[in-house]
Image (cartoon, rainbow, N blue to C red; front, side, top):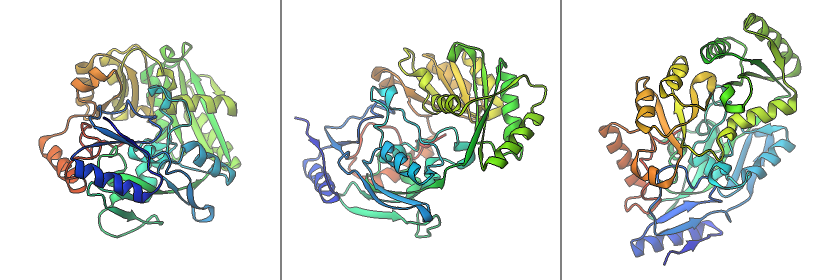
Length: 392
């Protein structure tokens, strides 16, 4: 009979893992299950729910550092940071609704485990770049710590980088420390309507290559939102700087079309939709998340022939709907990119690679890394190789 363990402290986590070792059994690790359908289905006999490892451990706004238990909801962390006019610069997405979980249920442990990052990633870096340190229990039932409370920490292997994106394969993280950043004093989103993909992505790349330091570059074809195509440019920073850069952006893109400056509320809604891929919640077809060279974005989307798709990261990230697995893989591989089957029925996720297939030599290396932390495969057996599951 399957057991569901709900530890309330690190000692209990260690005890659960040691029990699993004695019983020669396996564990599925999760928080509020807001990403239960992400990745290859897990084949574990029992589960560990870390949602009671909840709460802020320490927060030093003046030092831009926050530590929290792994099961702390992102909603609580975001609210606390907002009180101090700070944020997590990598713009963590909320993918819960894609997997039948209401918004706000995702945890800091889940975000870091999946290395989940939003539209600001191309400027601020991925979640792993803001992950400073952690405590975890390995596959031997041992509690250990890695990293620290500073950005630069030279203590050997950079384990935070390794655990970010490991999808719980290397150990059960219990405490996490992340870097926070001041929230921008001002934000402005410029929109151009009606552009075809090639023209829109060329404009986004032009803006990305400028000195204007944009923090959001996305294109929504008309098929996504049921209206005319929308090309989005976001600027953030001090009020006077944003105003000046906005005027310079308009000059840079002169002749592109008619500009529309969005209200704060409209801009927030649109960027949330891009961040969380809200346009595809409840869609009947499998959802893909493709990482490609930005100059290849339009070509990849066109060759796949998907009816609904949109671009983020100036064309470097494509979200699309398609049940043509081979067609998607071939289109992406021609560019040297990566394709992740983000959401699909379980039978499909059991029969096709969810993550980009690796060369045998790299797959073998990943297996050795996993076995060094979890030699008996206690954690999340059945999921794909560990170190390749990073934010592409």
